[in-house]
Amino acid sequence: MPQALDELFSDKQLKRDSASLQRWGCDWTRSFEIAPSAIVFPESVDEVQALVRYAKTEGVALVPSGGRTGLSGGAVASHGEVVVSFDRMNQILDFNATDRLVTCQAGVITQTLQEFAVDKGFFYPVDFASAGSSQIGGNVATNAGGIKVIRYGLTRDWVAGLRVVTGDGELIDCNQGLIKNATGYDLRHLFIGSEGTLGFIVEADMRLTRQPQTQYVMVLGIEQFGDILNVLAHFQESLSLSAFEFFSEAALQKVVAHRDLQRPLAGSADFYALLEFDESAIDAAGRSYEEVVAKGWVGDGVLSQSQAQAEALWQLREGISESLAEFTPYKNDLSVRVSQMPAFIEDVDALVRASYPEFEVCWYGHIGDGNLHLNILKPADLDVTAFYARCHEISPRIFEQVSARNGSISAEHGVGLLKRDFLGYTRSQPEMAIMQAVKKVLDPAAIMNPGKLLPRTGGFH
Ligand code: 2HG
Ligand code: ZN
Image (cartoon, rainbow, N blue to C red; front, side, top):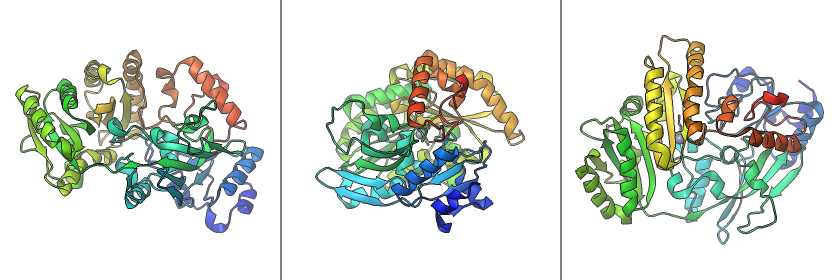
């Protein structure tokens, strides 16, 4: 390890012990080698700039690290990289009620921003199960989505300004928190979702909105996969939903066992939909419920009677991912247009049944915005490498279905290492060539999260 890191950072900002390397060198994926050479904890933008300039001169690869809750290996350091943790840049720097803007350092935890907004009488609406550990910088770098996208959109929609340190060590201020700014290329959007491959986000101006009404949650039991979308369309005819999530009985069983939760309904169904809506929509939701039951799409349902029950019902959906971790799942995070979803689900379901007869498969996700999570569970007696090899054999066939419907092989989890070699199923060759050319401009020494996102084909990175 070059001596200079010790000169750039104090003892408390630099770790090289093996427990720390293992802890900060990975995300929630469990299939990649974890082998960083050091972890650094900058405390200021100046320190990030100095580090990047040093890394560029010395040819040291850097891996940015937020809350490490990613599911695609975007924050994994497998090749002796220096991990750049934003844990010590975790302050809210500014708030302006007129602008409805909060300026966050990259390491602010998502939930801290959500709570700060509520304290100020506002609302930060992007939400997901890992909000308690994920960081704003990571959310922006992966354009995180989550459970409220049908009402509030993605992280991208809440970023008003970004300060970014490029691979040259330059600090650039993108969009200055403005609403209107018609001065050419909006570089802010280039960095959103770039997974640290173009620059490191050091500060973000995040937009807030008004607090919503009290939310109610309904869970419905549905037998036919295809009817889930009929139910969605039917409810949307008469009310605005804040969320429309689904999960299969197999997924429900896992989360109920893992968190020791109550099942939502007296009986069971093959699938469940979870809907959330404003208090003022309760009557419309009740009428829609009667109608979807009458149509035979829904067998039974439950409506939250209290905030505590609404939260308990949400746990049935939000706890699924964590409950599957012990099965070393192979994760698919697919999206197509909502209109394409029924045919897409039918094709993927048939393919999965035929391809993985020996594996348990859990379906769940944000079906209201066209996003499916398909987790294939490793049988206890199969070795991880053999399991992943088998999944990698089948993945291209699933991705062909995605491609045929102009969908995405990574709706919200990012590309990282896990999906990198499959990027061509969603992005065209000319697009990938442009992405590589852009990377070369912003990261000429190829030190910013190298090997992530962009395929290695073409001899670049
Ligand atoms: C969710 O929606 C997360 O729960 C995780 O995006 C999905 O674990 C997954 O596959
Ligand atoms: Zn998700």
